[in-house]
Image (tube, rainbow, N blue to C red; front, side, top):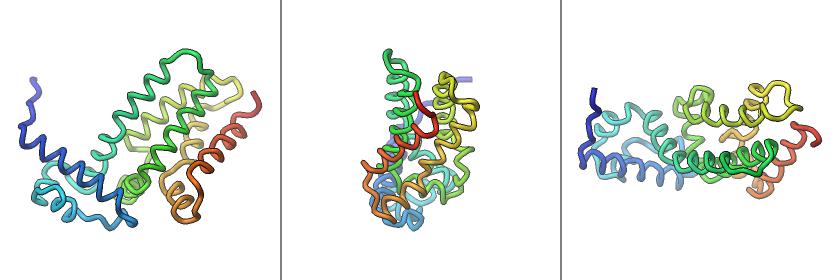
Length: 191
């Protein structure tokens, strides 16, 4: 069955909605309070358009996250394919990349956790991160259960924790990244 091409106006509306939602979540000190009405008004579309296109708030947030992650996924794939880095360094790079994304997008990611996407284990982006991290961990002889270790390391950088540490406790993002690197060294043991 042939896939239908999206109408130009529908594509413009979709892009406007994603950009508006992204901007509103980024600017909000309380991402839970960003409403579908506000997003529709900022995008210049009717609220019904949001619900027809994305289903609900969780669907819209998931689409915004997917649009933000695609360039990141491509960069990670390219970095994974590049020769020269050890499996341990790839694990560190993957987690640091994910942490930087969550630091930069902590309001959006927190909104996702609060909007019915609260089980990150079912989210498509979580599955992708977990799979690529597990694969890198499987190459390290000191790691006995790469699947569990990948889950545990990703739990250390949950969006709600990142937001709490940076916004609630005033942790410097560079310090948080350094703490993550030290934690990874502790988990993986000596080289």
